[in-house]
Amino acid sequence: MPNGRETLLLLGETYYAQPEEDGADGRVRSSVGLRYQLGPRTGLDLGAGRDWSGDHSADWHVTFGLTTALAFRSLMP
Image (cartoon, rainbow, N blue to C red; front, top):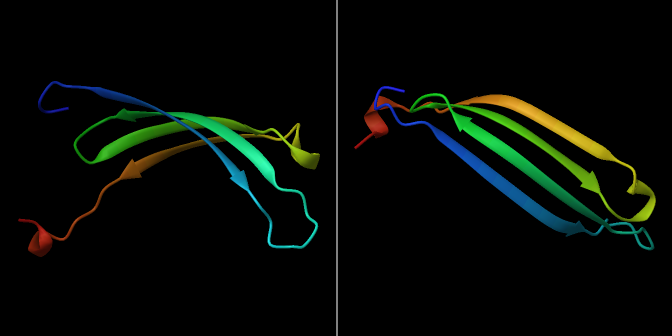
C-alpha cells in the first residue's frame, strides 16, 4: 500500500433464518471471515461458516474473493 499501512479485519456473525413456507424449520448459521486490504481500493476476502439447526446441521460453507472499489471521478469530492 502506498502509505505503508496494512489492514486485516476479522468479522463474525450468527443469525436465524425463518423460511417463508408454513411449517418449514428455521435455521441458525454462524460465519467468520477475514479481509486483508491489499491497497486503497482492493481487498482479499476469506470466510467459512456452518449451519447449526434443522436438517442443515452438517452443512458448511466457504467463500473467498477479491474486491475492488470503483468510483466515478465526477462524484468524488
